[in-house]
View 1 (cartoon, one colour):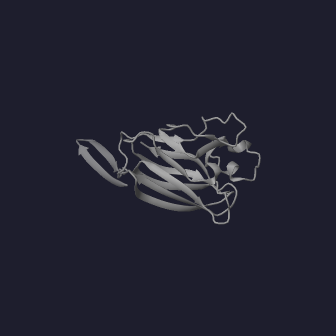
View 2 (tube, one colour; view 1 turned 45 degrees about the vertical axis):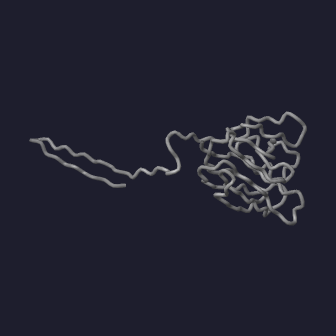
View 3 (tube, helix red, strand yellow; view 1 turned 180 degrees about the vertical axis):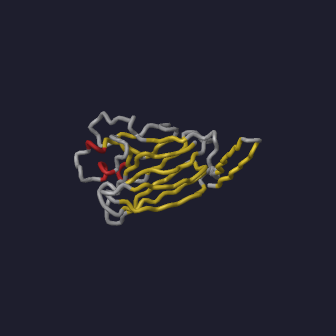
Length: 189
């Protein structure tokens, strides 16, 4: 913070003015016309007895492949990461069948910035989550994080101008139980 003090005496009056100058930082990838969205999955209700329902196309302006949603607080096994993964109750997303998930722009011409989301492992600790951000099929960004059942992780990406994110869970000894959660995804269009 920079301060400048100006004092002026006019006849018998003294005027003192303090001007504070603070640097203004603007993210170079964000313009004022962009709109930030918090995707919580809480308005998708699982009204069936299935362990998850697909996230509908164009939900939050995105298309979702192999992304299911369930009520993590009501899941029958409370020791799983489904309960830990809930940030905004009660629903969260997860990768169906432990298989990879893909999140894409709902329209071909729309790019987005993936800022962050919360995640945790569901069945086993130390699952590696590998993420790839692409535009028009070209890989622009990659990141891996380790996930645990009882600890929710804030995954910070800040990947600008992409049209898809591919997320794969890796665990050589987990068989097919490589599920991970996702809640409170923040994107900018």
